[in-house]
Structures are given as C-alpha cells and as structure tokens.
Image (cartoon, rainbow, N blue to C red; front, top):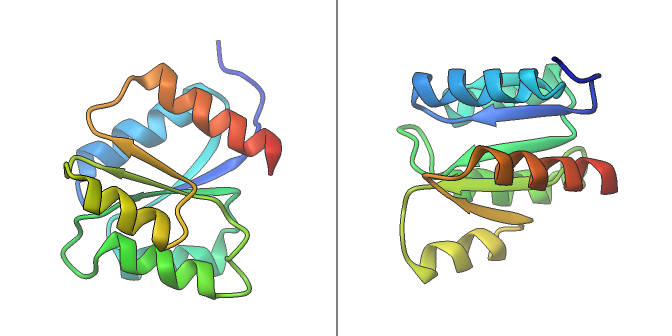
Length: 127
C-alpha cells in the first residue's frame, strides 16, 4: 500500500541503479522524489524542483558531493534544505568533512531501508 505524499526528496547519485532504487523506495513510502545523476544536474533540478530534503552521494564524476553540499548551504535559496550524505566511503575524516560542509546526516552504504526511511521521515516532519 502506498502512503500519502509526505515530502519531496532530491536523490543525487551517479549510479543509475542506486538512483532508481532510492526513488522507487521513496515513492513506495509516499515520498515524492526527483533525481539527478551528477552535481550539475542536481543544480538544474534545484532550480525547477524545491525539495524538502536532498540525498547526496559523495563520489560523482563531475564534482565531489561534499563540495556540492557546502555550496547548497551557502546559497540562501537552499541553505535551509536538509542534506543527507549517503556514501560507501569509510573513514572518520569523510564523515567530519560532510558535517563540516553542513550535512545533517551521514548514512553509510549499504544501509537498512527502514533506517533510511525513518531518518528521512523524521527530518521531513521536523522541517
């Protein structure tokens, strides 16, 4: 059963399979999603779509996701939008860089679907 719409999430990841998986998961949970497979595409999407939250991968070919997060947090139009960094990169330094750039959450891949949805719902409810 599909839940009622309860927010909009922009999914940014250069892996098309992950983008498809995450957008499907969100839609099944009643959370509207839009997708981008690069930092440049994410910036274009942000001009058209006003998400309530951004799920952002770190490793992308055109630009580091942490740099994109930093840019989003400096822009008055997007600074209040929560950013969840999702990454398979291990290491305390990566997590620290993500939070220093303004990320609200750091989620390691692989993740539990239910945990991801719980965190997203919690942030959307607070936002």
